[in-house]
Image (cartoon, rainbow, N blue to C red; front, side, top):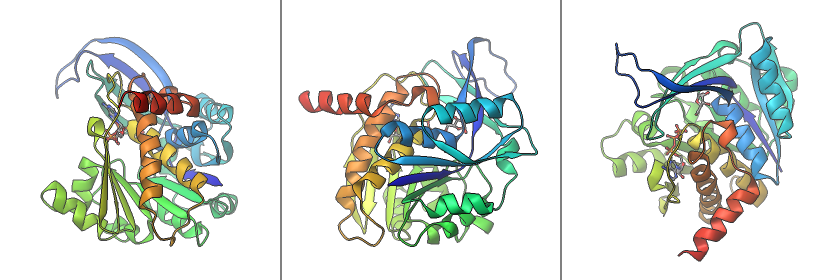
Length: 313
Ligand code: ATP
Ligand code: RIB
């Protein structure tokens, strides 16, 4: 019942601003905080806090204080970090501005995340033990490819195609090795390269066993074999949306691992819809709090939100 996340770990340096500066503009921040981030590490933390599945993280940090902090943070969440290697480059850093509406602008300096293009032997062995492999595009595409190739025959590969990339060139054939693609609306448009939401969903879903499109405050759409299921979001006041998508992906992966469903099983729409329902509740809670990993809720908090919203319907 294990989830293995292969991806990035960043130190997030977050400035709170009234509004995101326009090009050439300077704005004054009202506060600055540092916290654990990086799409891969955020997803691993979300999967671990969801409970019920062992979680391992495979990636790289630098031989510096930031790397040690990230490693310790994940360990404290019970994540197996044996596959977190030390690269000859500084730990990845994300420079983030968050405005009064909770929206963000992010610049990522890849550092150690940009170095590896292959898995080491021990990292491959960790991936081979996964029931659910989770990847993103904040590490080199060849590394994502290598991870997909190293997974066991009947293990799920969930790719969160973020940050947005048209997946051309090296990435063009990546989708052939993906079981579940999770994208937001921008990523959907970039990858499908088709005008119009419905047509883009149809075009991309036809290339994949399953597609999940996250739609921010509108929830998400799950598509399996042409069948669509729309799941509304929980109404919350957005404080900081950073890591909402990561929380969604990590919790989704943990739910999928717990379900016992395997690739090739029939009738998985209900399994994915249930995983997306729990993931959406976790992401809504994350949006209400500042930070990326700091904002990820526990399983008990998510269960409480689901129970409360059930009562109010
Ligand atoms: P980010 O890049 O900010 O981490 P994203 O663009 O990858 O996020 P979104 O579609 O914005 O992904 O959000 C992912 C999920 O988080 C949504 O499907 C939804 O369940 C939840 N979510 C995001 N924003 C809100 C919100 N304002 N209110 C409630 N739920 C939200
Ligand atoms: O998805 C949010 C993450 O994107 C942040 O934690 C930041 O590190 C960037 O990778």
